[in-house]
Image (cartoon, rainbow, N blue to C red; front, side, top):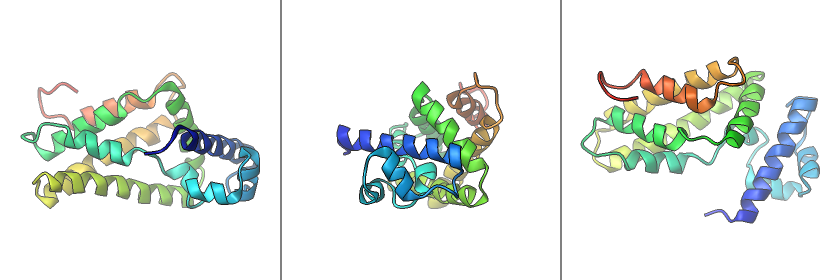
Length: 188
């Protein structure tokens, strides 16, 4: 479990990186510049983020998502467990998280290499969901389809969000996207 100090340092690095990426561009910004702007060493940067692109494409949500999926009733179909788990984990994104995520998405959208790195992060999230469902006795194919379908819906929400009005939140779009996968008659 991360300490409050660790979380503050990580947030400081993220904020410094976003500011520099927005001002200078992703490719023109170095890890040393980010570390200097955050008031840390490059070694400290790498303790929090394994690569420069990780600042934009990784998040701390995979364990939370897997736990939220696991917390759903085991008698539900895998798709519905996954959908409800994602809603529980991502549906209450704070305004600060929403603003930071919007900045990250805007920067990622400008770079083909970052979009590819995002796909790797999505794969990791999918694998966390699949492992949790399979661990609860769900067939591996059913678990993989459920995770893939729900993550595709969230990816569509993210891509739409990049061009949405400022008053549209990521949580709004995630709920809307996942509602498309709800069984007939289910509450979104």
